[in-house]
Length: 394
Image (tube, rainbow, N blue to C red; front, side, top):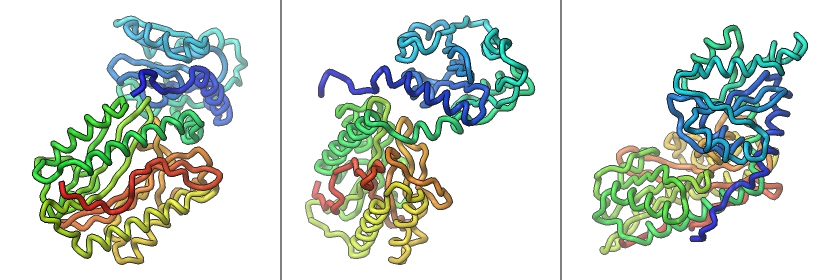
C-alpha cells in the first residue's frame, strides 16, 4: 500500500460550507447545529465519537461559524480543514461550563441583535444533525425555549447524496479493496471453519487492503444465509452448501459494501442443487435488471421494482424481503434509498447499492450486491468481482 492516504482536498470543505449556507437560506433555517457524526465530518473533516461532552458546529444563516468543542478537543478541531482555512472559529469550553447556554448565547450574540426584528433567527427553525444524542437535544431545548427544531438533513441531504469526483474516487478505492478481500476469502479455505473465524479474517483483510474500519462481515452458511443480516456464529461451514458473504467498511471515511454468494463443493466436489442454481440465476438476472434501470431521472423506486419484477415472475416474490438498495458515502446506509414509495429522481453523482436477494427459511439464501454511481450514461458499477457462481473446493 502507498504511504500517502487518499482523502478530500482541504479547499473542498470551504465549498461545502458555502453550499450548506445556501441550503440554510433556501430552507428558511435560522441556523444548523451539527454534532459529531457524518454531517460534521462532511462539513469540517472532523472525525470523532459522540460522547457526553457536546461538540457542535454552529452555522447561523448569517454571521460567523463557530466550532464549539471541549477544551481537550480544541487542538484537534483547530487542525480540521475548515478551521485551518479560516472559515470557522474554535470556541472551547471547560468541564463545568453550561455549553448549551453557551450555544444559545452565540445564536443571540451581537451579530443577531444587529438584525431587524424580522431577521430569520427570530422566525426560522433550528436544524439539528440527525445523530445528535437525545441528552444534548434536551439541553438545547431548555437553553432555547420556544424555538422550533427540525432535522438538519433537510438542508444537507441534497448536498451529501450527490458525490463529487473526489468522493466517487474514494468509493471506487473502497470497492476495489472490498473486491480483493472477497476474492481472497472465496479462494481460501472455508470447509471446517466457523463463520466467526471467517468473519475475523474478512475484517483483517479489509484493514490490510487500506480500510480505516472493517464495519461488518456477514458470513451466512447453509440455513443461516436465509437471514439477510445474520451475525457470524460458531456454526461450522460444511461441504455441499452455499455461503453468503457480505462485507464492508470505510476507506478515508467512505464506505464499501459488497455481497457474493458462493457454493462450497468441498473435496468431494458436491455440485449445487438444482433449485439453488435456479435461484442464483434469478437473483443475478434481478441484479442486472436493476443495474440497467439506473439512469438520471429514473425514480429510486423504479430500480427496486426492476429487480422485484424479475424475482416475482420467477415465483419467489415473497422471499425477497428487503429494499433493493441504499445510498452509501460517509455512511453505509444513507440517502437515496431504492425502495417502493421513494419517488426521488436519480441524479448523476448518487451512489447506492443494488442488492436483490432470495431467502428460503431453513434452507439457504442468495444475495448479490454491487455499489453503483449514477452517471449521465447510466450505472458506473464500482465492484468488479465476478458475479458468476463460484463453486469452491476449499
